Image (spheres, rainbow, N blue to C red):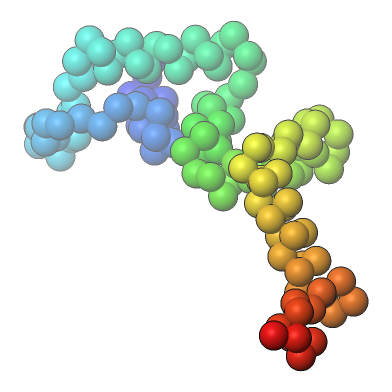
Length: 121
């Protein structure tokens, strides 16, 4: 990999952060551990396997890391028919059920009066 490509990948967040300060005069030399190099190789392998550019891999990582971005991408996928709507979770179902019960209770035409409310002891 060329130094230029390494800097590009670093700018996209596709290289592990180095803990050592840059060395050298006027140059930013970095030292990568074996694990760092394995991570960079794994990223390149993903790009080759799925025929995607580094920027696409960087965006995929952003989608996974940022819930708001994930929600917007999911919504777009649903709108264009590439993704099925997310299944309702059990807690969502229970929440909706509770809201329906509360709405029924607050509705004036469904509200029942207790005997004490009708003047009975």
